[in-house]
Image 1: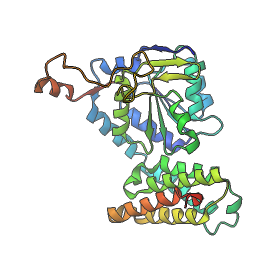
Image 2: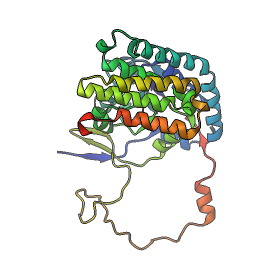
Image 3: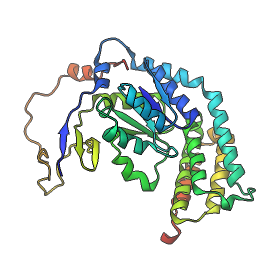
Image 4: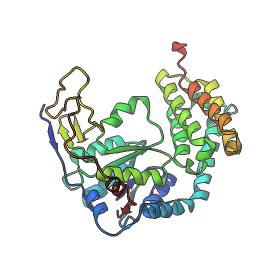
Length: 183
Length: 156
């Protein structure tokens, strides 16, 4: 795992949190340049990066990762962490190509939940001229009412008849059983 | 425009599915214990940032009009970064509001010193006794800060 934050105190907190999760190999970087060097030479399973950083920020880092870093790490899940998003950066942040954005101050419980979420998500990866990253649509609610949608895989808003019987209480309970973590 | 949609291998998902590991609640407990070891250093970093904000942007700072919006924004961001131990005092939210204020001042290219002063006073109060304040009073104060930082003079 790679954690990137220009603020040493914040990087320490982030590192302690993920170490507590049992991360076996943790690499820390305080600048995007250091992070880029690591990305070129190591294989990562998850990257957690701050957004606000001097010279090159977390948004530019993720854009570089998705477009120019090479095949080894370009599809790696990325969680961005930020205390505040500037008005001018809201759309840039959405379009950077991260899998999730978590608000600072981070807490272990929230970060672990987000890591699970990122590991289990089934969004497709999108590559086009102006965006590389996970599908920015988190939910599939169908096209806007009254329209047929503009994508081939848009589903109609109407819900059809159930194709399978309802789940039993045991099946539902099994979905929520205590989870084990191994990162 | 060509759009390619696909599902790349997710190594993280494979690792989490592997047998072994620790229970999520134990992972959270271990992480919380690790973070706790940083309490002293984090509080020192927090107080250092608050002191620098006061020194450079407080009412007594002679040169504050020449400071940059960016410096205030970054200092307030640093406060948020290490505010995990004072979240019950509302300092993180007050600092977020200060970030919003610095960002809005940068957009219009002018300082709103009355708004800066009220944020700095609130941060001092929250740092001193934020956790002891009745929750409704603290929430009202934070809501007030949010409204001040998002106030747009041209919108009335």
